[in-house]
Each structure stands twice: as structure tokens, then as C-alpha cells.
Image (tube, rainbow, N blue to C red; front, side, top):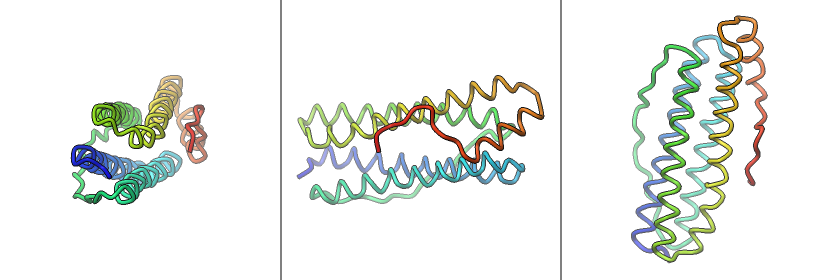
Length: 169
């Protein structure tokens, strides 16, 4: 059985993951309209992945005798001036999600809920991967600079992006 403190914290994380899915969806839509087929493909996939992270939390709460709460998401507020700015925001967002997961791990330890602590280790590893991917992509973008040919190749490569770091699934 989950304590109320743990249940509330996990439900808060459900919202974080749902909002993350919406943020990636907004980024995907912008990229698609701009003609960045590869970037939009990547962002649509990321949006779906965040939704699956949310569902994993929902299932966990319900299986542990709690009640998952599905709340509304917020409309993403993004700076959509360039693909580089978009990926900078992606990294900043993933850092915030990592902080939220770390806070949740701390609560699980404070509550001596070792099952939840164990469950959350997947999210910790996932966030390491997400931040590493964002940094890797930003490094590639910085290498491109203003080269239009490089941008074309980068966008094409993003269609089949493969993480340089792999978290356990």
C-alpha cells in the first residue's frame, strides 16, 4: 500500500510526464510546419515516449493500491524562433524532469518505501539518457552552425535518431 505522501508525489509526476508529452507534441507540430521532417518525427516519438512514462506511473500507483490521478495538462509555452532554440528548451525541460524524479526518489527514501524507490530507478536511468541525448543533439547543432547542407543532413538523420546512451527498458 502506498502512503498518501507517496501517492500524491507519484500523481504529481504523472502530471509532469503528461505535460512533457504535450511539450514534445507542440515541438513536433512546429517542426512539421517548418518542413523539418526528421525533427518532427523525433519529437512525435518523444511525445509518445513521455506518454508511456506517464502510463507506467498510472499502472504502478493502481497496482500498489493507490489511485492514479489524471489531471489536465498545461499549454506549452515555447520559444519557436529556431530549431536550435527548440533543442535548448528540450534540454532545459529534461533537466527539470530529472529534478522532479530526484525529488520523488528522496520522498520514497524518506518514507522508507523501498518498492517505490526501486521502481523509480528506471526513471533515474531514463533521465540520464534523455539529458545525454539532448546534449548530444545540441553538440551536433553547434557543429552545423549556419551551414544549410549540414542542417539538411541533421534533419534527415533525426528521422532515425539512435541514442548514444541507452537506458535499461
